[in-house]
Length: 416
Image 1 (cartoon, rainbow, N blue to C red):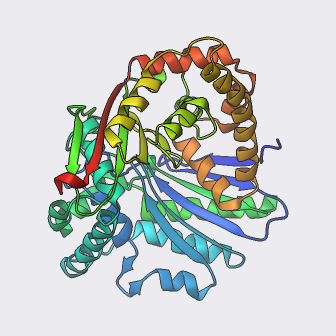
Image 2: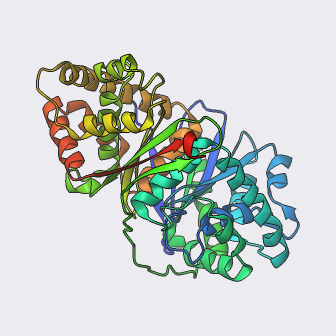
């Protein structure tokens, strides 16, 4: 695997920048990531996501049109611990960078545009709620993390969205959009002279828009829910269920959050794989027919996994999932041999996945800047994974799972 060359710079303000060189790519990608997301401290839940939306509003209109006028695409996202704004295009590099800093550095919050945005975000929330899986996810997230910001939908609740004002939105912005919590990334085919030009431009722009802002430290909370099993009424005949796994401490076993996440994804996908002996048994008992949706996440506030599926006997399916997740592997059993063989295949799949990421400009840039934000090292983690034995993998996963707690929720049409 050929690791791209990266040029990094840190400015006196604390703002960081990196340029990732990808020869022979015509497209150019630029982004600014903020170390602040939906789960972090904020007076009103959903403020981080609301900020993502409202920063596009400027005195002369939506800044998206300025990007369109130069043939560039622009977008943004909010996750648990970060917000990112990014753009891409082939030409007008200096202008794209100028606009990107104007986007994040020049807010225009008014009572009127906030009032106009609230119904739009409430509609976004309503769209999520139309999916049967939403209520199950909401139940297990609050089961794991109570009604904290982590236990709440990224966009907030209808009530919290309605509580966002110019004053508290401005406070959330000023406390978090500060140089020490922000990083710039560029990715593309740049000459040495272009790299230096970009870094000089970034230095001037971060000074213009951000210098002088100081981060306000806040205590990181680690909320705990009741970890109970819930039965949810539903109109219709949906049989969606979900399982939430709350991990005690990702870093207790391994120093890398990313590597721990990868190993847990591998073990969960292996144990619950549609190709494995366990799933075949579930299929024969008519408990499951379709693959399960598995996700592993780490955040400052807590680490967890979610598993979603559909079953006509959801309660029984949940029992079987809890059983397979908590019971130790019996050496030389069919399940043991399948997971051992699958581990070797999954290592190769992660290598191939990384190669695909490196060959996609936007995916590479986002992956690398997120790794940098979390003090992770993609290449080093991949090397550790490649040399890891199955016994070591099994011991790590067993130790993490041993200290975990599980909750669940499912929809019951009979209670609708």
